Length: 514
Ligand code: NG1
Ligand code: MG
Image (cartoon, rainbow, N blue to C red; front, top):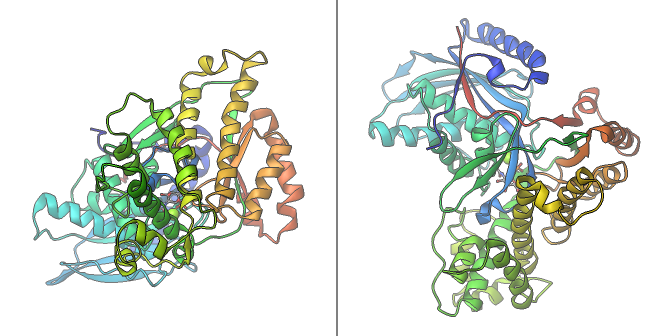
């Protein structure tokens, strides 16, 4: 048992020391604004942070472990339970501190269903998807006739949207948590909350994996988090050893906005489909016993991890050796570098094209002539391997340095950084989820002293993450300013938010007001 979401007594329980002054001011403004909007104080605030992914990109939906960390930026929902129901429905009033960008809404929601129109891009959809997930859980606990409470909500979100720092998962997790708490669940189980947030977010139209919601809910201040999905969801805090100079994760915005909901048919959702098709294809060709892939918790019910397990069965090979073998099997089996048509894949899977479409491309719309199974599988297996290697360097720094002669801190940094650089190359070449601006930010940073630079999150824009020793942070920032940010038309606000030196923050929490 991972335990319950903490009920914080003070903001010190939530934020790192350097973030406290600004956060205290922000919370006071939120509580005041709530009073202005609704005429009384909120009863509680639910909070869930964004995250930066350190390593393990686009492999969570293939059910391989990933290593994210929560950031300070978060979603706050100030909430009050109200007594405004009608016989068939309850009321949800939602407003946002940025009211010109995110207009207020009042919903009368029927007791039996929460309607979400994923084709309309509407900010409150994320709240509704958290609401829907939480209600499913509440009904499982209290019976099908459970009647949710009416609520007034004011949101303040500081995670940039479409920026690869997972604003959506922070919003969905904070919403589900708020609904649970408002309905009397004062000890919300972290695993239950995460699992429901993962499934709920798919209702908004993106077939996402489970990394973001896990990072948002489970993170511990000062640690990254190893999130694993097999055999079940687990999250383990991972400390970074102290080095001198201290290592920092620096996050830099590209200001290329990639809205996953809009681009999903040719980007994110297409990759999810390609990975599942690669799993089926490899299984059909390589699994001589002909055992079908096991149904799993990935978005399409079959995953590369499922193929992996099916292929090796009981084995004495180490997990690293298995992944290394899978990389070479992919190269020798999936030889078509230009991709595979639906007809080619269907014939290997012994199904018709309509059957293939019904099974893999009907629940989420995608647009593609060819599916690049080779490149996608190569990225996934090699990235899963890099996560393991990264972890073993972190957990056993002296072993990984034993044959080295130079300064041990320097070698440690270089080894971690090299893995992050390899991730970026794999994302650019094989997964095709980078973009020229992200590549440029990485190039500039490396030249100015970053050990490892890569995109973070889904990519195609958004943020990048860089491993930079404390004495090089200023030089890297200056280089970006001169060579990247000064060449773009940015508002003062964007300029100020462009680069963040991140300390791993805490996960979801509830704060009782009063
Ligand atoms: P972002 O783009 O940061 O929301 C997405 C997925 C993750 C993961 C990463 C790529 C959602 C909610 N999240 O993150 O599950 O697959 O891309 O590693 O879609
Ligand atoms: Mg997101």
